[in-house]
Image (tube, rainbow, N blue to C red; front, top):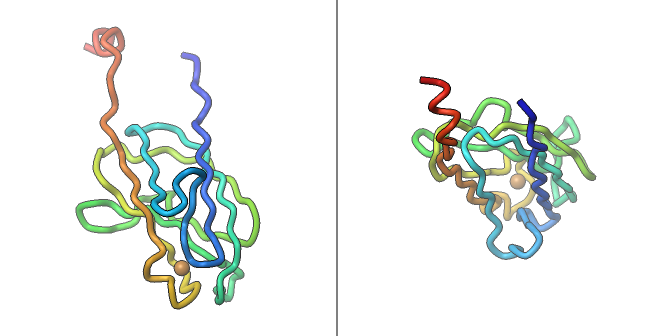
Length: 130
Ligand SMILES: [Cu+2]
């Protein structure tokens, strides 16, 4: 089966402890389809503080029901551009991305919406499965 190229999503983790996306500077959000493969390109710019390991921001995806991090989606960011190949959660819902590095006084507000929409099954595929 031909694999579709993962979708590129670009995020800026900025010096003012905010996530930003092109065209969505004041209210960034990511919408994906369940199980979709995504290629995240995150540019991180240092705020006031960093962790001992050199991380300047975090990027963790939290589940809607219990705010537990999604496995594989607990990212720590070093200064500069970093790329991650990830698979979206299979459960639809409104998730939250939060920073996990106490990067400045504004850290508590460093979060953004992440929506997982249900997967649309192609009729032919489900006919074959049954
Ligand atoms: Cu932070």
